[in-house]
View 1: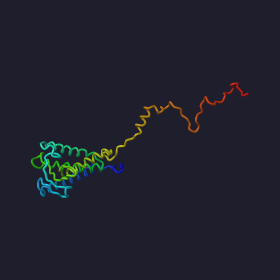
View 2: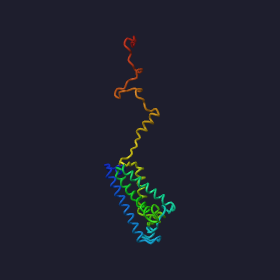
View 3: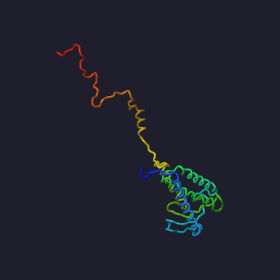
View 4: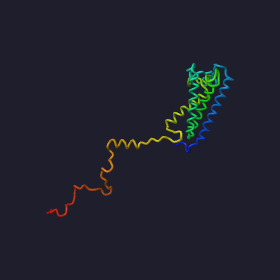
Length: 224
């Protein structure tokens, strides 16, 4: 898994920027095109079954977040999405990983898709309503759009990349147990300090000087 996630060659800054920008533009274009089709073809706030109850088109203009939360503070969501977009652009300068470049590019495209609605759609600048039209009641009660799909899936991808320890440069964090084990052994007293133990030749071990030592010359004792 580590080989699959790690990049063989780090990307250059320009290459990473091109990947991120290209994917962001593609997602933004797809999201806005789908919203234009939804506005032109779908009746407002009327369910249009596509695949039974599995997939339903339901056109709404959402001033708040998911589940219509925060309808009276649309400008806060505008600021939050703008901050996320700026953060991704800043982080993009550090990206050398293909996987990170793809994930952040798709995430940026999703954020820009909804941010475009906030900035330029009715009722006014920075308080515009987001166009939502996809409903999957079997999965969740919220109505969403293409941008939301990329935002949610890429946020999950970011969490997974962080969990597996993949850095922005394409390398992985390596956790070594050698240092903790050596430290534990030292604290428990199992390790012998240098210079305090006897050095013994494994082939010719030193005999105990008190066991079986030959009699010294001239000690005056003879066997009878």
